[in-house]
Image 1 (cartoon, rainbow, N blue to C red):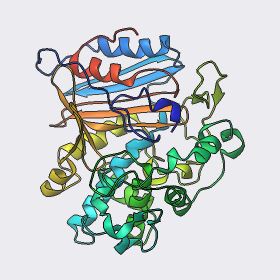
Image 2: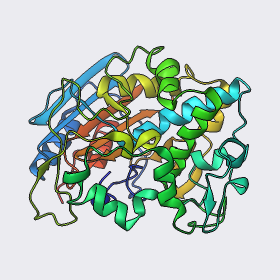
Image 3: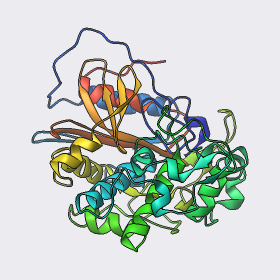
Length: 378
């Protein structure tokens, strides 16, 4: 969730205040890569470690092919904090609730959370639940608040890493600022949107959003490494340490930041998982195992955010330089940079993690796996 990572994260909608989308070069389109050789992907992991990432891990599935690669000090079955990949889980639950007739995504937020989105020009009666999920609400992202950044992302983290934040407290940080734009007028990545989405789930179901994620996604798919930790600060085993500089200055010292109270992220980014489970989740999602046909169509209806990328309902579409179309999400939180992507048919998937938040380029891993291109230096 480091603010420093925002500027270099490529098409990875992380927990930080915004999302950086690079316009990739578009060479002559190539056919999708289906291969048993993951040498280029391994090279990209090695390049990340050469760039200063302590450890990198990735797993891929392509048909019957299964591959695990590591570089540096990592285990292939590591669990890690997935950051904003959590958003896809949250959106999936809301689409399921809509299919059951318990909510309409075009309901105003005010209907479910009266008085919560209010102040400095924010008005929950003019914002729909759908606009929360595709980031067109205009609601200010609480992770952009300078004081919050200093306390949570900067050196203040060492003192406040175990603090508990309620969803309402996070939303109130955002409400102290003006909206980014009028509802529906533009697109801007806001973590407040998904904190609110989690609050809506709780209002509809009468239970914490995490219980809905567990009962509707984790248990049915048998995701044994996936948890919604709530306020639990320790990482489950197996896992590797997570590292951060807690600063925009790459010359600052490195801190071990594995333990933290994930309530700073909530429904916007608290989930812990591993590469196996993330591939299972995204493959099942794109194959229609979790949503109705209509629900999946809604989720994959995107708002353009770059010439080569669009954002749906908690799900991002990206067309790679070789012409391959992938769907998924990226995620970042202290000392953890994650990726999870799959082709539209759900047949070729990739998930992985760097245990650092100030260096490394996950986009190179993505291009290597789906396009077969070796990661270039620089």
